[in-house]
Amino acid sequence: MADSNDTMDFGAMLAAFDAGKGAKAKRETTRIYAGDKVTGTITAIDAKTVFIDVNALCEAMLDRAEVLDKEGKPTVKVGDTIEAMCVRFNDVTGEIRLTKRMSGETADSSLMDALNAKVPVEGRVMAETKGGYTVQVGTHEGFCPFSQIDISKADAAVYIGQKFLFQVREYSDDGYRLVVVRRPLLEAEQEVAREEMKNSLHVGDRLEGTVKKLMPFGVFVDIGGIDGLVPLGELAWKRGVKAEDVVTVGQRVTVMVRDIDWEKKRISLSLRVAETDPWTTLIDKYTQGTKHAGRISKTMEFGAFVELEPGLEGLIPIGKLGRGRRLNHASEAVKEGDPVEVQIENVDYEKRRLSLSVTSINAEEMAAREETARQLASIVPGAELAGTVESLKDFGAFIRLPGGRTGLLHISRMGLADGPARMRQMHGQFGPGKEVKVLVNVVDGERISLALPGVAEKGNEVDEEEAAYSEYRQAQPKADGPLGSIASAFGALDKLKLD
Image 1 (cartoon, helix red, strand yellow):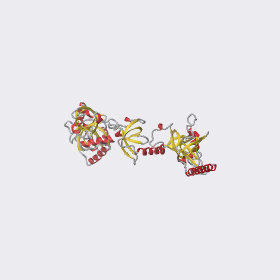
Image 2 (cartoon, one colour):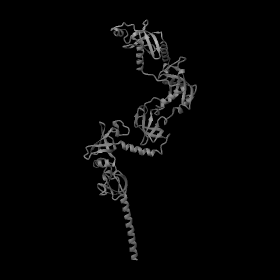
Image 3 (cartoon, one colour):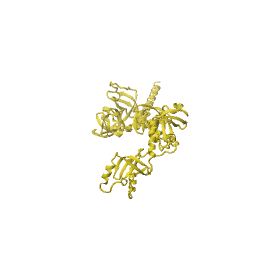
Image 4 (tube, one colour):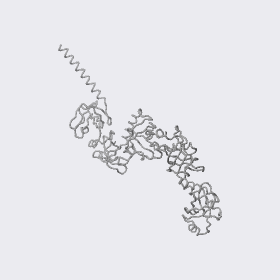
């Protein structure tokens, strides 16, 4: 019986030995390299070190200081599972050194390890300097270039005094040169967030985000680790707003996903679509035949747009602005900001268009514009008009005519005597601001050629006059070109809202 028990004990011992041998062999096949993220079980904690079983040939070591709370007490215990980064692996001794985050004294002693293993270190942005920022990492002062502090740069005040994780880009053994960067870590985080969102984010989704940056072309919004862009046209239903008129940096907003391009890493968002659409909440009161007060929001060659509500506009075709008078531009009858009373002529719900007619407009403004139009109509060949000298050139004087148009009174048509005193005589008789009577000689599009009554042309100086006037007109601001039909007008409005 004793022999049987001895045999069984020996067999059990042999099985246990083989099992241990197999486990040891398994440990020896597990390789850990600097930069690897590992998970292990805490086996012991002493005054300086936390020992962790990471299923390797030997236990890994983590500085005890990394697991202490503000009161100096350990936040972990034997048996806990812990995740850390390998910063050093010695093939000869088998030593494995881990870290959870590199900051303070840990960073001082391991910056070279952090550089080699690409392990993040904690640093505090101290000040703005030439080309970037100074960053305190432990007892070392490092440098972070402007372009590497963030994915999209903000004001320096956003960063100074803040603690961030950085990647060591350059480090000398004596600590003389330390360059750190933050952007690669942020881009890596965004890439992870982007991959996680690929299956959960869809066009049409409404979600919460934080306004991150205002730009002339739109607003960047953080929607959970990745940024999306709200173009200016998608900020509000009202046209022509600026980003700062609608949101502020740090503001929480609700946005709708308009488009996703994972390949180009672009997400287009809309702030206005996520809010109340005036076409669904206000349009019921704007029915055909009803009259409403509005304000001219934009004048074009084909008509004038009227804002009835923020984000709700209609179009008065130019044919309904002149009260029987032919207009070349809506600005001849109304100007932006004018209050008007209009009547709804037609409502196109599908195309979101309101066609309007004007019922009342500021009588004084209308009279002034009609007078301007009458004056412009008087500028025809043979007409004698009173004008004001606008400016003098070597070749003549530019005369401001009634209605605001400008004509050229060439020096050859001023009746001046030839000779060295000619220019002095011109400046004496036609100084800027003087009123003169002129004869309209030629009206050719934008070019208006003038003469003094009774003064005949001289030689080929008319060719010089035409070239001078052409040069003058090219230097003037140019009006917008025609945009086509009324249907094109509404298309132009749609484009303006998107730009």
